[in-house]
Length: 291
Image: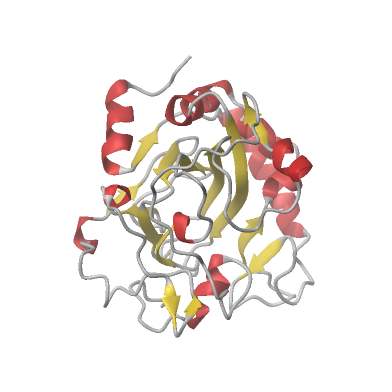
């Protein structure tokens, strides 16, 4: 079974991203939203970021404002259920092959009027591997349109033989300085929009970002980072058993496939440790403004 057309596969290979509609059922979406709401309830009373939540700068213990739920696949089995939906799995295997591992997951939340932006970046800058058969899936838990902070993609940037500089003052900062990236045409950005239940797929080297949610509509995007099983991380590898436990399909291997891909290590580490939001706090030259 494949729910992705040859034209969509060609678009992914050429442009670095594609949106496929109606992959997650309304029933499962309702169940996921209920689990998310329950998790968010437990944020009341926390003072700052912890192992589960990344909070907005305007967060208070009395009025929680959460911008990310970290590694949701570790919090509830339903997030594995989403990833194992036959339609979704078929597309993952079509794009990455039969042997696939989950690299990580997160749920980015942009509440109405204050959902934080994410500066332009490549996922590849955060976690280089031995090859770049890696993509991220964005499961739209809400309708996403041009107004509520959709992911913006710069077409074909995954085809360039470079990693843009994500450093500031000698430290990794998780963002590309728009004033120094003269070869990036931000005017060509395409918004990845769709109805709830649609999914975006973007290549690990695609340049992308997102603006603040300035609408009255919520925007919850459940993200899964998936890699070919023979793509091994060059940093932060700790436990083979845990590594193999994240196999989504096929078989694991201890023979990494090494290809000629551009690599720039995210070192020295960011001054602001934690999520991409914390990494980017040091950034002064911003593309996306907060109001």
